[in-house]
Length: 167
Image (cartoon, rainbow, N blue to C red; front, side, top):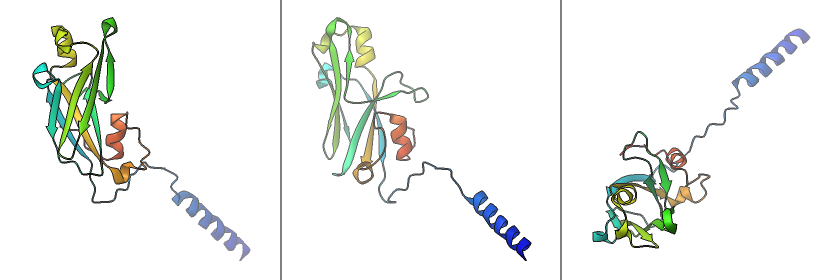
């Protein structure tokens, strides 16, 4: 009987050890009725619109608004996103700031500078003002409040909130 008891005990121990899953998945359990929203906006920041780009969007009072700027291309395949506000340091001590404001129905992306932006060369305007691509991400504050996510890293945000990375 002692042999069977020992074998049974080893079998139970072996089953428990093998069936335990020590894999710590980064699965996020949401509240089921709150969804993050993402919207791409492309436009030119020009003196005609006071170096501003506006986008109508329905924003709940509890949402957190994040705006990213595509800093390397106008294609989705190789996009690199940078969180706003952001200062670009240009030659000659010039500084160009990207920032945004929002209310319940609109996100306004704008630039400010310590120089007259109308003095940009054609190449500079193409790099910093023309055909700029921004991504607006609305994050529900109920989950965003205690979220352990790096909002400066676009990939981290879309992974945490299960946002599909598409236009």
